[in-house]
Length: 152
Image: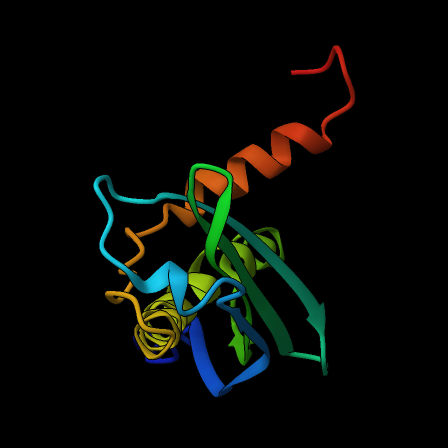
């Protein structure tokens, strides 16, 4: 007789996505909206945080903050905290953190990118299309920063 039982497959389900915080500032309008000789200097920071919401559910927050400068003048700045609740099932315990910190923000990012593009465009500027983010590299960097000095 053959055993026809199979181990349940791992699954990652998005239960919901939402804006937790959104701020867009255009402090020097309308002067900041005029033509420029050079493009603005844009800086963007990314952060991912997560907390357990239920036994197999996790809330993951993707925070994107950015600023566009023309010299020392702020053209615009934004902050977005975009979150989702995800259900992880049949994922080995040693892989849960990586799934939460890499795959979940990867699922959130396209929506957050669109929200920022729309906010910047609504602020009177061309839409800001943020380049794709390597969440795996960010996760590895965060792990390296958490290791005590001298251990590798």
